[in-house]
Image (cartoon, rainbow, N blue to C red; front, side, top):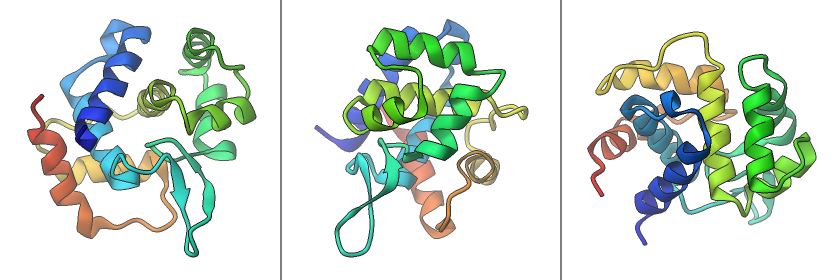
Length: 162
């Protein structure tokens, strides 16, 4: 299965357990683009030099004390995250979620959508690659951002058709 097909299946599952208003084309494109940027939808654990695992898990590369903790504690997402955890059979604590992200693509997609939901700024319009990059940087706060790859990956996410 192609990486974006894997991503879309996870996003479909996640959107089915989140409130209907969260499922928008802008959210889906941004989630695909961020997942491509973070993991290419091939790595469920961060790859570090030497082949070991880094601290990030899931296709959207959440760290336990960063995105996971943030989604579980943010006033906009706390209750929704608890509902997602209940639906996925995962304890709603940072360690349990972080461990589950490596094997539960639906959980990872739901947490990615919830992180975007916590952003007070609206999601960028479709085709606004620079604004999408800014949203990604603002919310994921990557340690080593690679803008050189973003444009093409965003276009792949924007043009994806099942």
